[in-house]
Image 1 (spheres, one colour):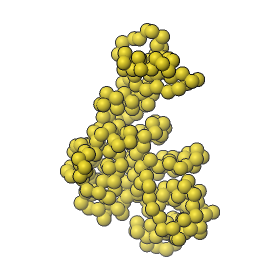
Image 2 (cartoon, one colour):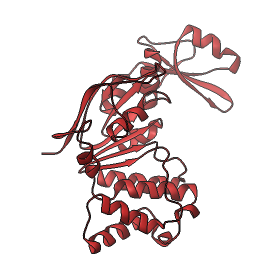
Image 3 (cartoon, helix red, strand yellow):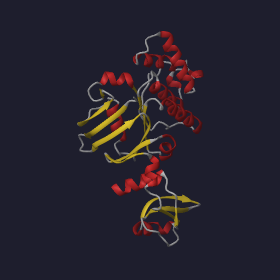
Image 4 (spheres, helix red, strand yellow):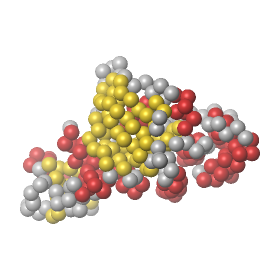
Length: 292
C-alpha cells in the first residue's frame, strides 16, 4: 500500500494578523502533486510547516502513521526539502556536503554513502564539479545542488518550492525528468506559480489563494469543467478596460502587439469572440478571480 499525506484543517496566522493558512485540508497520494497559487497564497507557509520548520496554530498533518507536527525527527529522516532560498557552507565541496547530508539521512555505510553521493551528483549534472567549493557555484549550479540534497537518502516525502528558479531550459528538463522518475514511488509536492509545470508533470493538484484551497483534483478534470465556457478575442489596448467591465475576463496576453483576452461565459458570445479550448491557465485564473 502506497503512502499518503493527509492534511486536515491546518491553520496559521502570523503576528501581523496575516492568515496564511485557513483550515487547509488536502489528501496527497504518492506521485507528483502540484500546488498552484499566486505569490502570497500561503504555499510557502504550508511547505515550511510540512517540512517541520514552523509551527501550525491548529489542525493536523500525517505522513502515513507519522505526525508531521509532533514527530519531527522521524519526519526529517523521510523528508527531502528544497526551499526557494537555501544557504550552504561556502568552503565545503559539493561532494563532502552531500556526503554529510546522506549521513544525516541515515546512510551510515561509507561505501553505500559514497556510491549514493556519486550517483546523485551525476543525476544533477554536478559530478565534474564535485570537489569545487560551493561558494564558487553559479546560481544554476547552486540550485542543482539544492535538488541533489533534497533527493539524497530515498525520502518518502519530497517538497520543492519554486524549484526551477535560475535553471536554463536544459537543466529544467533534467530536473523534471528526475522528479518524475522518483515520483512514481514517493510523494513529491511541487509548489509553483508556473502553470505549465503542473500540467506537464502532475497527476493531482490543488489551487490555493490567501490561505484557502480553491480546487483539488486532477488537472484534466478541472480543464474539462471549463469546456465550452472560455472565449477569446483580440482587442485594441484602448479597449481593455471596457472589456474588463463588460465581461468576466479571465486573462490577457499580448499577441502581435494586441491584447488577446480569454473570457469566461456560460452562454455563447458574439461581438467577435470565438470559442477557445480551455487549458490549466484558464482554470487557475478563473479560480483565483472568482475568489477575489
